[in-house]
Length: 376
Image (cartoon, rainbow, N blue to C red):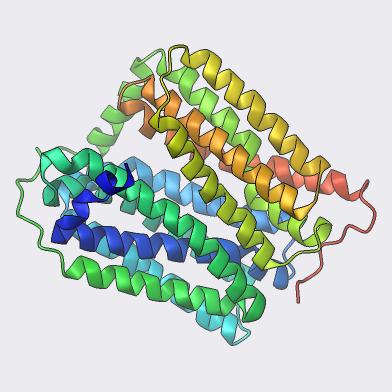
């Protein structure tokens, strides 16, 4: 199965694109581990941790509304280059400011906005570019190859990021992330993308509005969208706000442990891929309910059993449940459902972080020895 998924790598241009994005996702994983510990080192509160995540999501969701339309109007490689160059400049500046001791929390707010917007341009452009450089019969395998590459990066990246932050500094992780953007830009410049006829032009506002009207017109789409939003509210804030604090203040760990826990999410994704390979869903509603119930129990156990190896195992199993649930839910709806549910999930992340912040504050009153001090 894995060899078949990697068969599109025989095509030169897809191989360049795949490798560039593999390196870029690896760098994003470095940044994801370094970010909370850099903020904590600056004396950030849980509210400020959540604010950084929320700003990134607001920018991402806002640009997602036009990212697909731009991918039909502009050269896709140009959009990918713009996204990677914005990421390289932003993260490179953060690395310099961190290394020189001039970095402030306000700088991280600005970086979150830029990176969130840049990432919103990347996904639709990448998805639209693959059919331009891969034969139609290889497209399913190309999608599988991308999942394999992202899984590899999401396992190795957090571990490398945790080691860099622990034994060097967050600035080192930021600097390496900036270099991965530069390498991705280099691979994009080497692509040979054939000319294509532009899509029928209409007003960008009208095109975005037409997509929104379609969402409103499909009655069954709203329960699905609301479902994904509620699930994201339950889980997103726990990973982005609570988990770094749990690692530092309850597990007495550092960025390397947080990196291992984050890598466990990637392992969970691989477990889900293996399960989905032989899964035949006859009653998707029952499956979704069972997976959600199992995932909820696993997350409760993370809080009740704050032991590092146990947390790593529970996070891997929990993410496997979420990945199977997400893929199974998307199989049961049309092709438009995944995009809308993904956008809705991201839009609900700010609320998820606010709820996590309230939980952290209330927990302070019950947990002895809790403190949010700058990391050293």
